[in-house]
Image 1: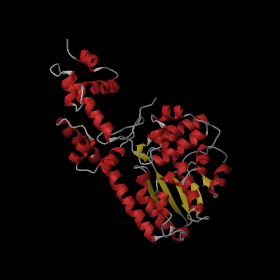
Image 2: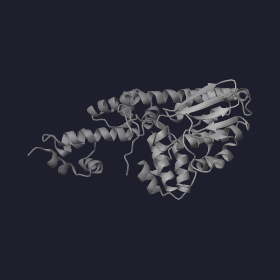
Image 3: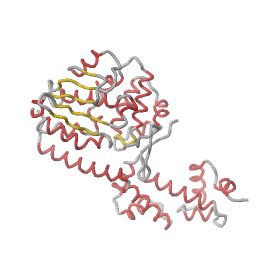
Image 4: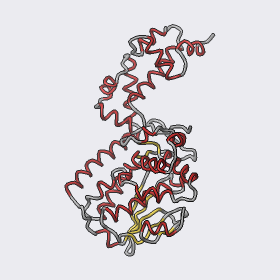
Length: 356
């Protein structure tokens, strides 16, 4: 199984090609997983490829390192070389795949306002995704750039571009908004499959992935426009951006780790003790941990294991004393936990780690 590479603050996760990793919202991953399963890919194969169990990949509030999606796309392309997998996935994918961006866009007054909203909040879907708008008299290019696009030869970008084109037609009611679509990679199937989906010309091997819009469409009204609801969604995304930026900078998780260390020094390994020391609500602390693909319990257990190994490496600390220092009511519970962490009993670990 490949390594489970969720992003964790305080550590810079670097992918095999030397690129620093970011995170992606799991709604996007859930769509790819559902498509893989519909194609007959087994849960075991998905876990082997991604490093995650299906239950984790179905968590709507979690994020994982963005190379997980690329690994899954590469598996699908290799398994179905003659199938335009990204187009197939995008044809039936829910718009929630785009991490809630479509929820805000549908209430904007115009396409210009909707695009600006997406540009501000692209990082909620994937924290290294950037949207730019290149506007001229003849056309407007809405360009998406992600530094890891090359890892899956543009599969993720293609699926999201397909979804946005669908969204323009089916939800915003802008059926003739697109002049053309630009994609950086070569076609994965017949050219007519792409043009049948996008309902406009599609150009390949271009310098950027872009939806090219007719200039006059930017100020076209959106049929579901609702300023009150749009304002509400804007406030919600402001909070999400703050949480992601805080988590990405590492400050949030460092605060939790420091609180766990301080609580451990007092023999307190309970969640309530940790969040109290961190000055956070239980809910916010759990969200910070989830932003890095982990949980409060996992962080606490990580600290507990580290301290347990330190105690057992000291001959003056008995197993019973270590259990007490680690907050266990009896040494039997500690022995079970230690075996679960390391595959060894405390006694066998001690024998192999104490100097003769």
